[in-house]
Image 1 (cartoon, rainbow, N blue to C red):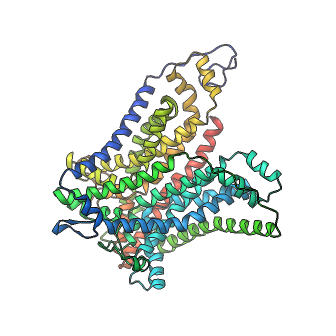
Image 2 (image 1 turned 30 degrees about the horizontal axis):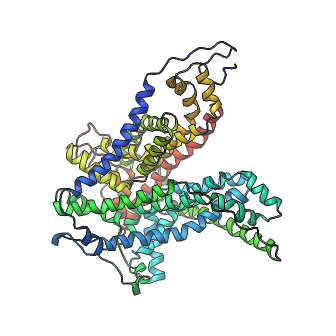
Image 3 (image 1 turned 90 degrees about the vertical axis):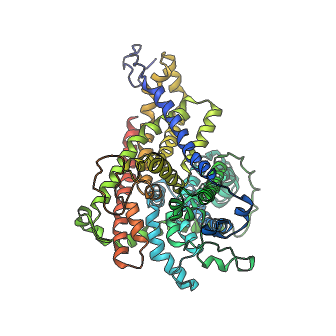
Amino acid sequence: MTTGLLHGASPVVGVTRRPRSPRWVPGLTAGGGVLSVLAGLFVVGFVLAGLAAGDVDWRILLSTSTWDAPNDAYGVTAMLWGTAVVSVIALCLAVPVGWAAATALHEQLPPRLARPLRSGVELLAAVPSIVYGLVGIAVVRPFVSTVGNVPGGDSLLAAGLVLAVMVLPTIVAVSVDALAAVPDSAREAAAALGLTRREVIRSAVLPLAGPGMRAAVLLGLARALGETIAVFLVIGRADGRLPDPASALSSLLSPGQTLTTKLGGPEPVLAGAVGSHRAALSAVALLLLLCVGGATLASSRRSGARPARRTPYAGRFRLAHDRTATALRTAAVVLPLLLLAGIAVLAITRGSAALSPSFWLEDAVGASGGGVRGQILGTTLLVIAAGIVTLPLGLGLGLLIGEYAGPRTRRVLHTATLTLGGVPTIVLGLAGYAFFSTALGWGKSWLAGALLLAVVATPVVALTTAARLDQLASVHREAALALGLTRSQLVRAVLLPHARPALLTGLLLGLARAAGETAPLLFTATVFAGATALPLGVVQAPVQSLPTHVFALAQDAADPAALAAAWGAGVVLVVLAGLLLLAAVPARRRMTATA
């Protein structure tokens, strides 16, 4: 038997060198699973502890819209309305464009053109949410103000428009994967019947890809439900705005509130130890978790494909319909690319300060002067520390899902990891504030922020690693076991070399997302000013960071100097996140070639 399949085996036929059994593999796998479960329990425990702090009248909470904390009146129907409205607006705009763009990328365009175009569309996902908030302030709010005659432009419509752009890359990416899973034989059989390309897609491809494409919509919905910062800056945060049915459409042009923006305001921290107030806010967090978790769980279910549609009859306008559908789908690809280009031009023109080296190398001065040196150092420290924690946790959890768990346990772990990745970061930040800052007495601590960012990034690493292990042909495992390798030796000699490209890619993608997170850091790790460039300890050791710096400046949108400084810091943040994403592409290509 040729042993060149196995790393660590002798290249001489018939002579094998049995690799040493790595003792760290079982511990790493168990640790990744246990700590990930603890992270989920950490969030759920925070919510349940808050509910136990006071009495919640669920009937009143779910049937009234008045939120008046001084008078102990708590109703969330207006927030539920706002959450539903902005999510529906976002999906109504993003779903047709996303599905059409995905179909064009996989079914119409040649691969040499589709690959760079898909990368361009997915770069929208690399834009931090706080930068989308700046785009909402600079473009969307003035647009709504002009078109709808809304003073200031803060409205549910503005929030829905911003969210539509944010969820678009998720829908495109997952839908392309669903289309790629359709076997070529289905296309070939339909084409052999004389169907045009549009008819092949409609009759043979979409029915089979439908479950995955619908899952893309649900994942986009989970993203929309859990978004805080961008919505916070453009929705107006007005409590109690529940319209009657006759004015439902006109209410879209009015300020509102969502579940996430209520949790993102000052109330949760100020109400940390107050009984009924904290319980009501915890009830809001629980409702948000249920909404996001429900959408995430629904997206992970594998429903059967719909039956293929009846072959269309020949008609005079078949070719014309085919050309029209092709043109519309191509336009759907161009639209997100234009949005990306527009955001880039807007960021460069508004954040021209970032083009100066001094802006990167000088510390901030006053409210909006100077540069962002301290914020860059703080963000770098948080990302590096989060990466050190994420790498072993993500690898261990990925091995547990992809190799060690049985089929039923694997499905449970996969769903739980997917749900953990969908936990709104505002809830994660509040849980971190309650545990690290209050219970442990850390106050503002860079380590607390890094640990929360690790929770954000770990599901990405684990799921990409598990998916890579799924692609390994069973013959490699069988050959390794036939040579007498133990499970731990199999992991070291075969699985880890195979999983390295996905591990590195998942780590860079997870850290790119974590680098742009604002909500987990607001309550636990950062201050606007007054922190040293690098902390000297853990307790009462805050840092400055780019996301929270931009968020603080963006709230003073009436001050041109503050807004210009926010755009400059936003450009720096996009560059740092973009570098992590760009590093993932050549790194994965090289490691795949050597795996």
